[in-house]
View 1 (cartoon, rainbow, N blue to C red):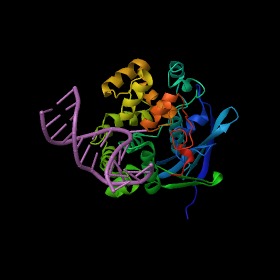
View 2: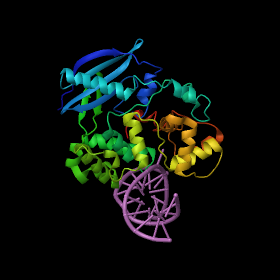
View 3: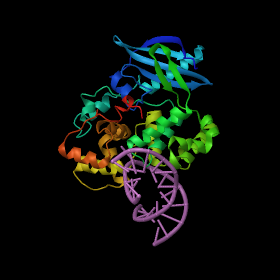
View 4: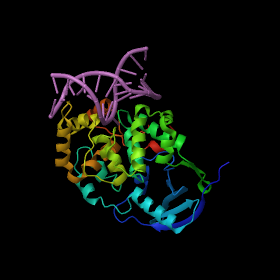
Length: 314
DNA sequence: TGCCAGGCGGGGT
DNA sequence: ACCCCGCATGGC
């Protein structure tokens, strides 16, 4: 029998710029991170488990901290993590204006205006998630991440909301498990994940370890550091971009995609890539191209996608 | 069943 | 600067 975390603190916050709480909460959230009304942000700090719970409250957002500790340092940490993950201080007005007339991204300018990236607390989480996307479909990659948390992360239960939530396992936990982490279905990626865990613990640069290439590096920096400047180019974008923006049914080189993205979106190229996955529901490329031909996209489909993943128990 | 699927690095040319 | 292959896994 596990005990739930106890309530230790609450406060109100108001995002500074254009902001949609629901859309941001949904974006790349799993079943444990959003329940339709509340966002949950579990984290572990100095061995103590905590979870920030956020919901809309009149014109503001109510933020509650549940934890094993009530120290002020813990509360400060929780507020900082929540602000980073939810992007409360992020100004995307320039980006929303930029995409108003974009062939594909226009819904981000309206009606999805206010959506921000839901980030992860740190580079460790960002790298593991990105590594799981290598050479895998959307659902396969996310199944790995969900298995990873469920099997190796600590379970949190918020009694007040009857909400169960698994924290992200620490690098130390993963190193101790070693090759056993393949039980999460990560396959040959396990070596790269272990390399990253070791680099982080020994304070070396985790973005340069073996198995982390340019794509993984860029995706992980976007989702963990909100570093939006560089487009992560994979096979999916090499087919999607020429088709969607040049009507060409051919695959462009990585270099050509980068040049196109830099010219079209400038410093927002990386964010545009992530928003493209939301708008297209991250469909497999062949079915996506068929849908584009018919001119109909469904960002909120009845299957797992960047905006609906939270509804599914994978 | 035998293929892939949002990568990657190593080894060829 | 390219091309090509193997690598685990699970779903179609």
